[in-house]
Image 1 (cartoon, each protein chain N blue to C red):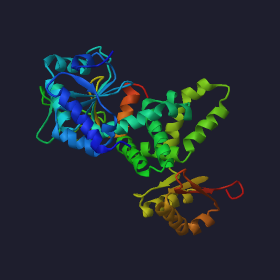
Image 2 (image 1 turned 45 degrees about the vertical axis):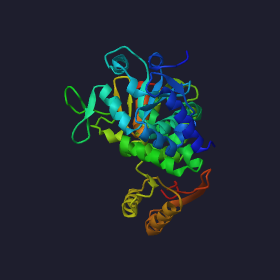
Image 3 (image 1 turned 90 degrees about the vertical axis):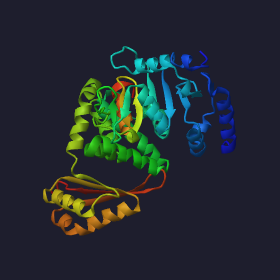
Image 4 (image 1 turned 60 degrees about the horizontal axis):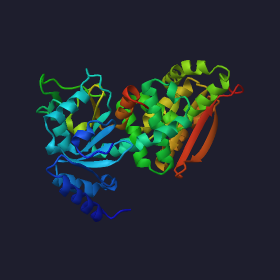
Length: 91
Length: 291
């Protein structure tokens, strides 16, 4: 199916929004997260810091990817992403 | 190679059509590869969003035109409680390129090491990255390869880095070939035991030393000396590149008397990677004659 608008896109699978740091924050807000005063990503409702694939708190500036399947916050470290693929997708 | 100014002109012409609308249009992937053009355009147009649909192509859309339904769709896809199995990534533009380059290598990796599919997820991730790092080293892309090795170290710690080094030096391929020979009639046994064997090997390989740029010569020297005094039957030192090879040589010089007194044979292998980086492998062995 030809993609011609945003509605078409959400019918697709295997989609990446390839973004700069500013847009990353915008998407983060859409997902119900924000950054706290120290730059860490928090849940906007609970104000608790989220835990990344590294099982650690994560700053927005360290964020490489937010991936579906339980909202995974992955640092910009290829080993973290590879582990995520091996655990949740296909590797 | 496409001229950067023509890439910018092309992307601007697409942006002029879709800006302020809900339309999405295809763009030339070259735009993503050209860092300067991309940064310039994205800084000046913060709502411009690049979209990659796997197996299809690259698109450009205006994120400011998202409505509440779009945001609900996104939250649903990311909701851990939903049964939605769609694979979406919101990914940093520089990181995206690294991820895509890595993903491209995965099918080939499976043919290089047939055991990958039987490994636990952490070992599978490390070995896939190690195979990829070796390809980069062989292609002369040492900086990118080194970054992968560093990332493994940051995420998986000392054991992860060691497993990567063991792979790069041929130990893991050697082990899998040995297992295939040993258990040729019983591949199910290999599948069952491979994880345990690799973990055990990493834990017990304190007598294999990889000299890298951050290696403190004094610490390595003390550790090798300890192994010699404990009369380990096999001790190996691996160095890649002229400065690390120099460190290996200096360590050997310092330990010359200990090596002789404890009756070790020294075997040396001088190799080169496909990109002609020199490698030095030193093996200290105690044969039955001098054991």
